[in-house]
Image 1 (cartoon, rainbow, N blue to C red):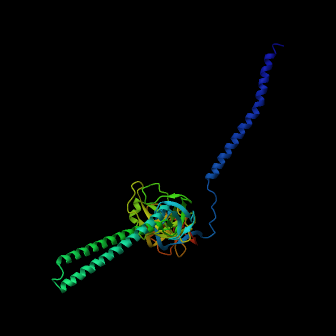
Image 2: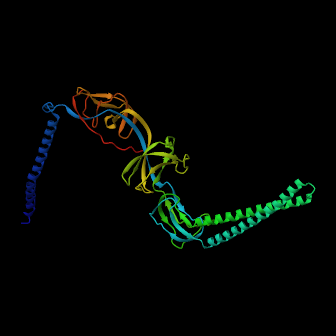
Length: 415
């Protein structure tokens, strides 16, 4: 039994090899079949197929536009902001306490309208003193006038007698009367001067009393209020830098658009130049004119401040709103224009034109001013020519085509 066991092992090994052989043969056959199929496919692809039938659908349709004459311009868009035409802090001209205030934020006021009233207790006392002083000066003038009239009459009488009777009146008496008349005249002049000073002081105090009433210097809207009843307001002319204003007043029926123009574009700026202004918050666009510019270029930003005035009668535009100002850079008037989509690339652009007999013709053209969407054609086209736009691949000169007029969307120019 021990001698037969070694022979049993080889028999088992042979059996296992026989079981594996069929699986290996199947895999080999499958690989061979796939190789044969691949080779056959390559041969089929390399061999030319049967001739395709000719295109019986007729001429192809191409999108075209007419070459037209128009004004072409390039522009740059600058960011701007609306400011009130006038914007001030309203100060008092005299120091006092607020006894009445009639306005608040958002109130519209007219020029000369009363905003607030101040109380200056010592001012009325000074006015009463000035009135008393003026009254005293009036009496002084009246007394001096009477004295002068008297001295003048005395001298006049003596002079008349001396002329009628030369030896009757002594010359010394005439000189004395004349001196008294001159002195009385001087006293009268001094009294009148004192009266004028007293009158001027009273007028000054009355003017200060008028300053107790604070009025609006122009039509506008109250944007800020700084004082309430009882607030102590210092005179705006005082040396106190902390003088409290009463309100802030802004003119809103006329606004300024301020925008910075880059240094390179400043030679184009002149008063009267038209610009297009877009207000994103209102979704509105309008035409404005440059009315003033700073002339000097800011060294920090290398820009020049430029302004456009905008009427705002209904107050729809608010100060601080942003705006986009379209500034024209160059312009070509009454030139032939085609879309950029019609031009080929390269230094020698060409276009496809559909002739009157319905055939495509390739023409080389010369271009001038270009925008983001259109180009000026200076040579190679005539007005009214049908120019192909869009994809040019597959188009051949001389082949038949049918036109389909299209309208291309316009794109706003921005620099």
